[in-house]
Each structure stands twice: as C-alpha cells, then as structure tokens.
Image 1 (cartoon, rainbow, N blue to C red):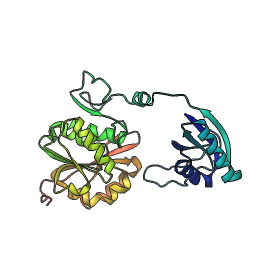
Image 2: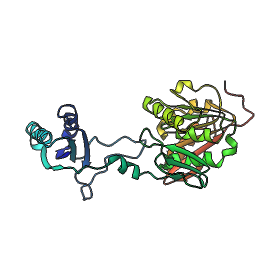
Image 3: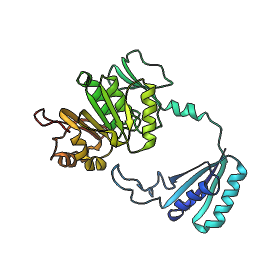
Length: 303
C-alpha cells in the first residue's frame, strides 16, 4: 500500500478529496491541519451542537491511500497538473502492512459500568466480577460505552436495576443499541430501540441478537404510547426539538433520561422541557451531564 501526501490551500480541499475517491481510485482520503502544533494551528471544528466555522484549514494536508505505487504516482501527476500553485507534493511513501483488525481491537478494553455490570468486546474474556455483561463489537454505530454520555446512561440503568424490572423502556436514538440492551438485561419487560439511521437500526438488531435479549428495533414510528423509562442519548439541539415528543412518551411515574448534553447546556435544556417535565442534573462526567425527570403519578396516562 502507498500513501500520497499533498499540501493544499483551503479552497482545493473539497474538490481534491472528491477527485481522489471518485476519479483516481484512492482507497481513502483524509485531511489534517498542516499547521498543527504550531502558532498557526487553527480550531476548525466547534463543540458538539455547534457548526464548524469553515470547511477546511487554511493550509491542509491531504493523505490518500493507494493499492499500487504507480496509481499514487499517476494521481499525483494528474492533481498537480490540474490544480496548479495551490497544491504541492509533500511525500509519496510505502505503508507497512499491518493487522488492522488487531490494532483496532487493541483500542477497546472491557468497561466497568458498576462493580458487577460490564461492557466487554466480543474478543475479550469476561471479567470474573461481571454479573451482567453486554458483548459489543464497536464501530457499527455510536455507543460503545466508552464515551461519558453513554457511560452515564449505563451507570444510571445499572445502579437502578430493580426499578427496571417488568417496566417498558424506550431508547430513542439508539445507535448501537447498547442502552436498550442494558435495560433488557436489567429486567425490563419490553424495550423499543428506535433511530432515524437505518445503519444504526441494523447495528442494534445485530447487537441485541448477539446478547440474546428481546428488543424491538426500528424507525421512530414504532414508539407508541407511554413508557416507564425513556432514554435519549443524542445532542442538545435535537433534544430541544424533541422535547414535546419525548415527554409525551413518559408514562405517569415514569423516568426521562437525557444525555449528550454539555454542562453549559443544562440550563437551556431545563428551560426547554419545563412546560412538560422538571429536568435536573443527575450525573456529570468529563464536562458532560446526564439529566433526569420523573412524571408525577397523578398525571393522566399517555395515550
């Protein structure tokens, strides 16, 4: 395998990467800040929930992989001739063969959610202390248990295990299905996992099957009526928009659990949900917060 490294002006980055993939048979194309770790380094991508300030760095490094050296050389010649002074060749080098599967797997270790509840990648041995285990292959969709937002949701489920027994649960924006699986393992009688992304639904179905739990996976339309627990680990912006819908699904005496929220966004989420439920911060982890609300038993059941 061979890597072609090009230095490109900002305006060239998007057409360059498209040409590499669509016309020049590159296996992949990635972009880095050519000024990284210098005084000229730029912050391109904002915090979650905020748009990027621009589409590329002022000076970008474009890296493309090719199966053969001749293909990389040909691509370099075409691109340099086509894009002129805004582009120059930095390197063309062989890339050593690696066991990429093993390298990827090495990044994921078993994660302890509580003392007895663990997430364990399928290639790892289950720790002796793990009484409840989710076997999960990372990479299919968001939700491996390693991110603080997912970890806090799992911790809430794990610590309140008895409260989930025989309850109905909705995982809205399920990603890999990890939260739905956790609810099922902790005794929920019925679990719906929904997502707008068909790839996430496929991943959730595969992971629920691998963990031998009964979870119904599908688009948001399958969520009907009231649930004893509604959990949504998304981001603050969609959570604000979804406030009336999510609150409508919380049954009397039921819990709403929201994650994907930065600490500085907690007040605006509290305000957004105030017409329906009273949110408060239930947990925090690395600058993120978990927000919780409970619907009073006195309210009428959701239709």
